[in-house]
Length: 210
Image (cartoon, rainbow, N blue to C red):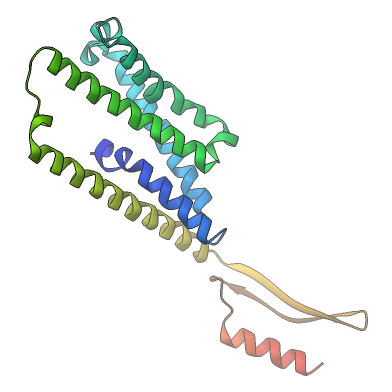
C-alpha cells in the first residue's frame, strides 16, 4: 500500500510543491514538506535494498543481470536503488529539481521493469494484458488518480505544517522612535500571522498618547 499510495505519487507531490513555491514564494512550508519527501524516498529505498540483498532470488537477480535485457535491468537497479541515496546530501536534497529528478529516476526503474516484462512476453509469444484496450483506459485512469492523489497529499502535508507553525506562540514587541527616544507601544504573544484587533487598537491608542 505504501508503494502504491505514496511512492507512485511522488512526481505529482513534488510538482505541486514546486507550483505552490512559485506562486506563493515562502508563504507555505514547502521546504519542510520537500525535506519530508526526501526522507520518505531514502527510507523506502533503504527498505527495498535490504529486502533485495536478503532475498535476491525473489527478484530473479541472476537471470536478469546477465539475460537478454541485462542493460535495462542494470539501469533499473541504478535508478531505483542507488541514485536515491544521493538525497543524503543536504544541498542536493533541498533542491526541488533534484528531488523531482530522483522521483523520475525511481519511476524510470519501474517503467523499465514493465518494459522488460512486456518485451520478454512478446519475445516468447506470450499475450500480455497490455494488448487489451480496456487495460489502456484503466492505465490512463490510474495515472490521473495518482496525480490527483499526489496533489491531495501535498496540500494535506502543507496544511499540517501550517497548523504546527501557527500553533506555536510567537512573541512580538511593537515600538517607535521619536526624538532619539525608543517608546515601547505593546508586547504580546500570538499564534497566527495576523494581528488581533485588540492588539491593533492598543498600539494605535498608545501611539496617539505620545
